[in-house]
Length: 148
Image (cartoon, rainbow, N blue to C red):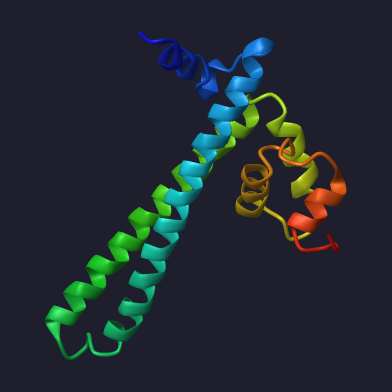
């Protein structure tokens, strides 16, 4: 097993480390959160596509058995996607809960009204858990809330 593979295994949500390995674990956690967030966006797009197409099919399904079949299959797919979305969100929570530094920053960011899981994870990834910027002014400029 290579050093990188061993480090990644040490940084699974259930096996989070503190101390010198904590920084590497945060990097692994942020990368994992980024992958999960991309997958979540894809699931949401697929769900939206199915919802839009099934809404159109719903209007003709009473007259057409094939349309009814497609509509029923779309409903099943939407239910499956909803389960997958929930599983992805739970996996994101595992990484946040088990990674030193992410949990507290998540709590602070999500305390803002209207900011929930997806927005908070996006901020944590974009700012590399607030290590990307040297000061709050740089972050404000990045976020488009201040003049450079």
